[in-house]
Image 1 (cartoon, rainbow, N blue to C red):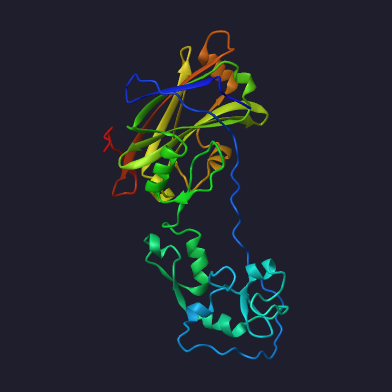
Image 2: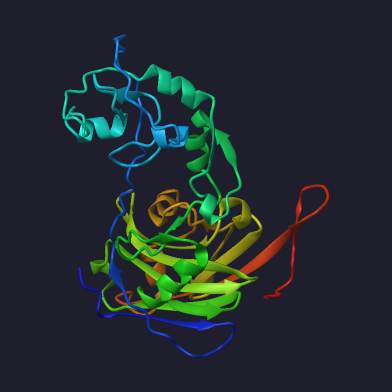
Length: 327
């Protein structure tokens, strides 16, 4: 569905300049599942060991010859002793990539035992992670490592770009043409001439820079239990623990009425669809939005205002609101 006739304009921190925004069709991003490892039937056979160069490290022996990643149990081998990880075993159609012999279901138990005694750096060590982990704990840590790259938070189209926060900020500005603003308050106006034609759409309107951090403002139209609704929410460009240090409020109204939402921004570790489906934001039913718009209810004129602030924990663990100071 095309949305060329939608106008979205914004004012920030009391300024009157209006800024148009581009509208994009709603797409879902499919995150690839983590590979699952399962034990296969083990056969004890006499395998002729290969000659190993004395300078070859154990870490090199644990490197899969196909994907070059570290191998995790079950580690498979052919009758000639060539090893391969369980994921790549299926990819090579059960044929050894080194000697082309059939792999079968032979486990390299000796190499698995060696692996249990080793410690490995996190694969994100080049990004700053100092952790050293036992072989079986490494994957578990890497799935939640604070130094792992972030996925692009742009919600208007599927984007596979990953990186750290400074890189993603530049990517959003240069590649997705997202508006960048400094300030902790905002004022957005959404205008749509035929709002009943919009059933499923996503807008990522602005990235805010305040308190030395970045926040993404989203606005979506979708169906909630067969009822058309609009939803606005904020995401924090950083980890969940850091996101808890901030709060935000959103307000929409008209004709003497208003709705107010206050909450904690979600980390961009959570995809925009996950946030939307959890209803963690300001939700406005379309009929209510048209009532706020006034007139004959045939045109959407919705103004959403908001504010971001930082909280500082007390000694008793509670939070204290820091006044409107933005560095």
